[in-house]
Length: 113
Image (tube, rainbow, N blue to C red):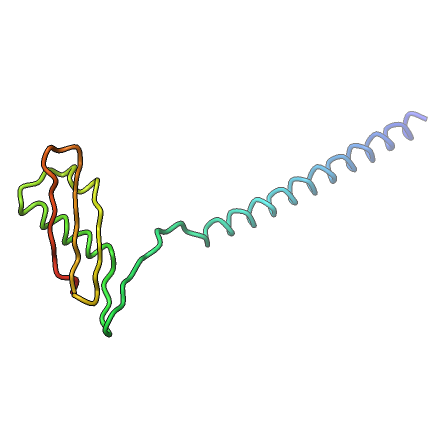
């Protein structure tokens, strides 16, 4: 009788180990799938492009040129944080106004393209 109890105990232990191994394997497979999905999706900022008269320019380029213009006028860096930008592609103009808590409002105009 002692042998049958030992055999039953051994079978139960083997069954438990097998079930644990299956759970571990299925958890690893799920984790790998989730990781793969996360790697393929990258967060990126949307790109905004203006096309007019067979020419194109991105808003990033316009903003860089406005910041350069503000710098040439001696404006502080914070002036570029509070910008209102108006694009008139039919006139090839970009107007901007900056009022970043200064007493004097800074404004200007640059060519679109």
